[in-house]
Amino acid sequence: MTEHPADNLQRVAAHLPTFRDPLGPAFRRMEELNASLTRMAEVHNGLGHLAGIEKSIARMAGIEKSIGQMAGMQNVIAQTARLADYAPRIQDFVLRDPLADFHQEMAKLWEERARAAAEAREAHSAAGCVRRLEAEIRLFESQLDAAQDVGIRLVNFGSEITFHVTDIGSVEPDLIIFSGKTQAGAPVRLLQHRNQIDFLLTTLERSDPDQPKRPVGFHHQ
Image 1 (cartoon, rainbow, N blue to C red):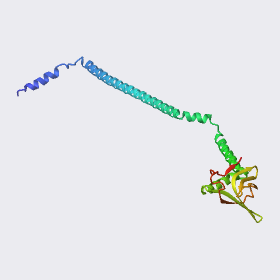
Image 2 (tube, helix red, strand yellow):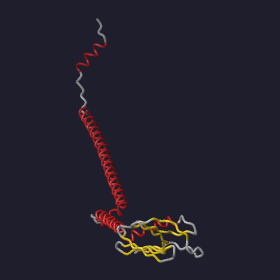
Image 3 (spheres, one colour):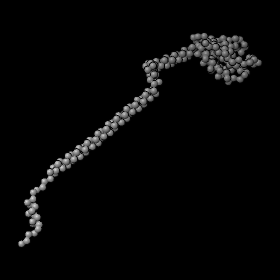
Image 4 (cartoon, one colour):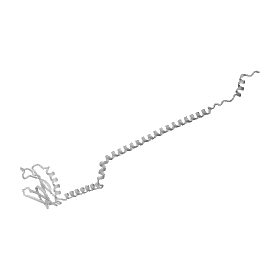
């Protein structure tokens, strides 16, 4: 039986010495070292990226701080503007007497009291009585024509007297004086207490129609 050539080759190969590459482990260590260096480079790049992020965060924090400072400055400016608006009023408050309103109210009360007292004195004085008589007689006098004068008619104890009135005056505190003349031309002077005045206003024909008409004169202090 003839052997196949392949079988011979196997037998020959089995007797050949085994070849070992002396550089194999060195290459493997180099590959491992390269891989380690690659991982370190990646880690370094990652750390650098993180550092960049940290710097960006720091810059953002600085920007936020600047924005806060600007907001604070804007608040200060706004408050200063408001204080400028209130400055005149603040000066008023500082210089104002805290009892000023009370003093003003008291002054008004005293003025009103003084005015009321003056009106009361006027109402109870002879001059005040003449002033009130003047208002009434002027109104009556305005209704007369050029040929008529103001007359006073008195009725006392059953007797009656009528005379032309020329002047009315007063003597304080309570005396009223009527001056005039009778229809016959006799002078008349009537003295009355201000609380006892009681007469009738009437019209009389003028005794001297050719002369200019003279209104009743009033004299009061």
